[in-house]
Length: 393
Ligand SMILES: Cc1ncc(COP(=O)(O)O)c(C=O)c1O
Image: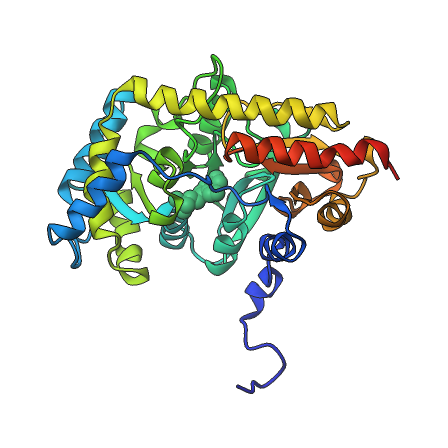
């Protein structure tokens, strides 16, 4: 198709062409590398959950579900928020089921932002944030979480707010740093959101993948925040079924109504046979949730220790799927170049953290490795990475 001038793609999306993920996955295939790039588990979710989906398909849950999601899942999300956090959500108008957390994020930003409105984002940020903000014609205002602690700096945060701030797109537990924001940090965000009358869209997809004694606190539990917060969850992350793309957003009815208006024209509805089994799994025991986190936590330690044994400086995550490692001591001052060469040097694929940042400077030598993989896969990756120790360049 010819266009008046060059690319047919709208201008504001041109910076989002081919992602590093596509490039790295292709490299993984062509070099036979162990792929620790993308964040998806290489084992299936719980048997009962999978069996539930089979039953739902056999039982006829194969047509459009209700617009906001099947009632059982909306009730399960509301009950989950009450049970884990004491948050009161109306299952009728306070919950919307979405195509993964990704659609929830897009529908929230598109529903809430006029052109030129500003969205405060923690940098580095999950890659859909920037693209979604651009799609909405809104403006990204980044606040850097600086290594090695990735703590939120109050002055930097305050500087990102203005009288155009409409949304804070918060992410804790955070991808890619693995930080879980402290209550004091959340209070800084809450204070500024209240002062600027901003809405917080809180992406909490890693809420149950938190390690050691760290506790995840949803910002909606802070004083005065439930009324201005939309909270996002994901069955993909929580139950290791990322391909099902079942997510949800919950919060005050008026905000969820606005998001629903947009969602109905993005995808209308989604995932009928997956919604019921996810509803059942969400009501699982605390022990089941904790056992999944413990299991993942062990794999985090395995990979982190392995990376450190070959010479990376590891920044231990508190949550999530990823460990960040500084490659400077291994000749990786520029992580993009380092990651492009890593499959050839060692047969392992990882992602440069720079690609998640507006200002890559402070994270230039950081590399992200996924540990949501089987132990033998992680062990093989570490074994392969061993060659780096002898070929520092
Ligand atoms: C912070 C964050 N939010 C959202 C998502 C997307 O979740 P889903 O697969 O449910 O769309 C991811 C996936 O990596 C993520 O890391």
